[in-house]
Structures are given as structure tokens and as C-alpha cells.
Amino acid sequence: MSGNKLTVTVRRISPFANVIDISGEINSFSEKGLSDAFSQAIKEHIRTVILNFTDLAYINSFGIGMLITLLIRAQREGKKIVGYGLKDHYRKIFEITRLDQVIPIHSSEEIALAFAEPMDLPEREN
Picture 1: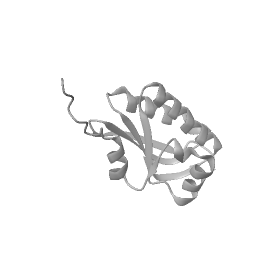
Picture 2: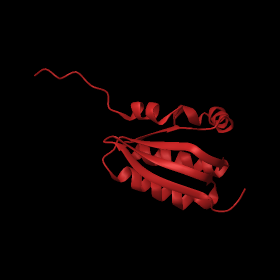
Picture 3: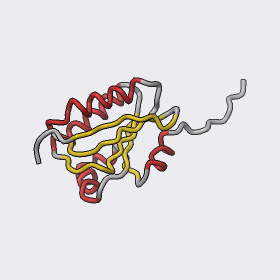
Picture 4: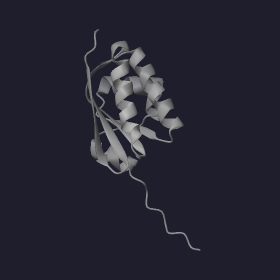
């Protein structure tokens, strides 16, 4: 597979999270589109970027490297990345490369969002 066949959309789903909907291929041709979408997603005061892989058609080793680059950027900004909708084949690749240990993959947007929400902390006594 080759060529630039990536479509990305950023959407706000909570006060704490933005979703990047990924459709198509993540490869060397899609670097700018994904990087720009990520920059847009982290601009706002959010805690988590959720990657929607539901419509991911293809990812190669360059694409895996791009995800690692996004993870590093997120960590520098004090954000976290989670994902959902990864097909079994790519889920296995994430497991083999251990990428799933740093970008947790969930089965649905709702579950991914639950991991993005801040946990209620008990009020502090003065």
C-alpha cells in the first residue's frame, strides 16, 4: 500500500478529552496530517487524546514510529494517549511491539473516555 490515503478529524468529546478519528493508512505519506491533527487535539486544555482506529485500513513500521513520536509529544505536554477500535491483526502487532503497554487500547470510545476522565478525589481537609 502506498500513497497518502489518510483522513483525520479532531473532535471534542468531553472537557478532558479530544478524539482523533483516523481513516485510511498511517505510513510515511501521512506523517504531516496525523501530526497536525495531534497538534490541534492537544492545543486545548485536555488531559487525554483518544485515537479512534476503527477505520484504520493499514499501518506500517513507519506508522508505528509515528505513534511513538506522538506518545513522546504527549508525555512532554503532560497528556496521555489511549486508543480504541483496533482490528485484531493490528492489536497483535501492538502487543508484540508492546506498544499496547504505553498506548492502552480499549474496545469502545465509551471505555476509552472513562480512562480519560479525572477520577474524583476526596476533598482535602485544611
